[in-house]
Amino acid sequence: MRTERRPAPPLDRDKLDRLALRYVERFATTRGRLADYLRRKIRERGWEGEPADPDALADRMAELGYVDDRAFAEARARSMGRRGLGARRVADALRHARVGAEDAEAVAPEVEERAPEAALAFARRKRIGPYGPAPADRETRARQLAAMARAGHSYDLSRRIVDLGPGADVDPDELR
Image (tube, rainbow, N blue to C red; front, side):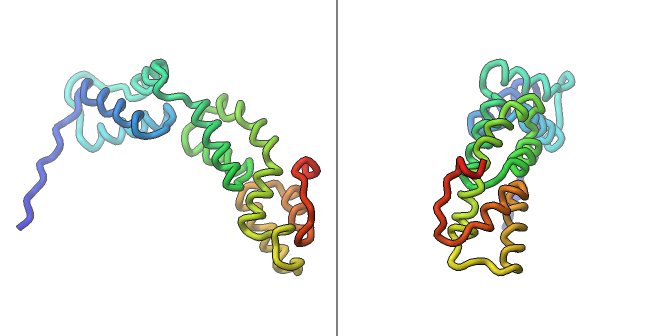
């Protein structure tokens, strides 16, 4: 026998504040994502009282230091770079996370500076170029270039890495 769940009571200002606080303590987030989450919760549970302003609540959480878009962007960019993802994928992820343009642009130079290391990390993981088992034929080379492009790396950098023979000594500074 299955019992029916009671619907959650509608939100009010205090409940919304607690919900926002609980969210930011559990997840690294941005102002935009927090506001989207709060809007979704209001839509799901309903609202009771004076009109809610999720954007103002997200701004207040940022003023209190619970949400920091710049720190989020820097951490996400470093993490993605270690995984071997390139500048284009990082920019897409930051846009998807609703990081503001100013914060995303502030992180971009660091991402570009670390592009060779990220590309080599991706090549190592996928056994491309100097990390491959054998020299790549034309078809394999095309697939490797496509994989690096999907990972967000520039064509020029990808081509230089794919063209390196297996076992080649690679210095990231030479790829800049």
